[in-house]
Length: 217
Image 1: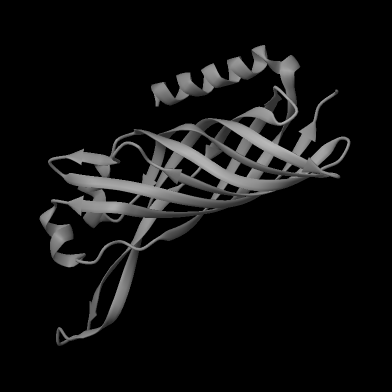
Image 2: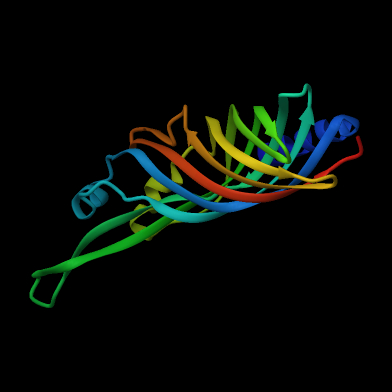
């Protein structure tokens, strides 16, 4: 938690120092679809009862961003987001005689504070901008909600994950505000878990809309 606080303070101070160069700021929000691209725990309980690969889970994210204009076509975007990620684990449902009658699911979630800095390339037409962006990202774990069967494994998850952010979108730009719609992909460069408990890695997709306030020109 102390590392998280220091990271947030550092980013806020950086934004404050560059306040004169911030051209717009605002909020984004939408859905997060996360999936474990690798799920190989060594926990005997998990291996016995949860034999299938975990399915994707859909959650909700929210973010605040600031955009610094450096040229007509290129800008730098800093963002802080609450971005929960998780998976859905299936197991066989049994009747009173031990016969399999279907499948039930357990949903687990890990909440992250995602901090990213991206370079954004855009092309404008009338009041519309079309853009792509990419940059580094760090996810700082701030909470989790896991079933008791997964408690030991989730407890070992790394609390800081480095990854990449890339995406594309469009924005309608007026004199004082802009409306944003974008799609984003977040591959992790580091393992969420990589020790005697096994190996876990995740990938994430996001769909978001937002609104930005344009500063004085």
